[in-house]
Amino acid sequence: MTVYFQEQESAHFRFGDNDAEILKVLAQRYIGANPQAGFCLPYISSIRRAAK
Image: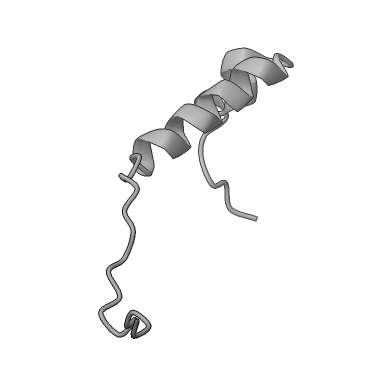
């Protein structure tokens, strides 16, 4: 079996059994790779108002 990365590069090597720090690193990595997008409402031109 091949090694995905070296043990020295693992979260367990760096943080040990500190689950909170490992999750913090994973969350920061996810947020960094997926920046916040602004909220927008799509404009739908096919909606017509009812005649009065």
